[in-house]
Length: 258
Image (cartoon, rainbow, N blue to C red; front, side):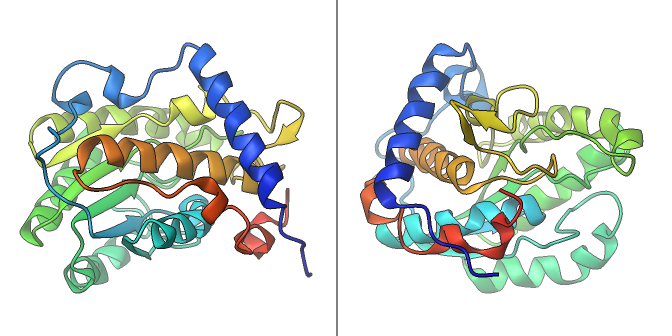
């Protein structure tokens, strides 16, 4: 089914509305927290030239505006987010680990962004060990690791038995991030809030399926993530939304439930 892209001016105005709402919501970004997890690098810190994005189908949808925004910002970007997988712990993770180290190395990234997936099931120890393994793999490739919390979901029968595991995954990632100067956890609650909300300001930011994002939400997430990276990497100035908001990505099939 062909879908018309959301006009640039509409997306840009929606991004602005959510920025204002986030500032009034009481949610804080990771840069607002204390300790190593929230500490930004100094202005003389590392530069940013290539970003590798990891995650599941939620991340695959977000990767569409991210690709456009990084291109407009003159930064290399590659997504290996995978529908039905992409996780480093839980089901399918053993298959993912067979290829993941090679994918990370071949991408030659400065930064690997791992958005915690809806499949990151396991005990605290299993989650922590997997995230620590990811950190070691990323640092061995000469890159830094950015964990990003995933959007809250509206669980169906498939996810409901695993909600406790998903809710504690950020804690495990934070423990690993706090152990290294080359890792950070970013809390995307500033974008998504604490609970699933399909509609924000009268517009659909999340898919009706309770899991995925819509173009408006994905655009807001892009604006937020690039802003967080700009705080930590010298010389990186995100492109204005006018340069990437209406490049055709909003018509992708990932947004068919929006």
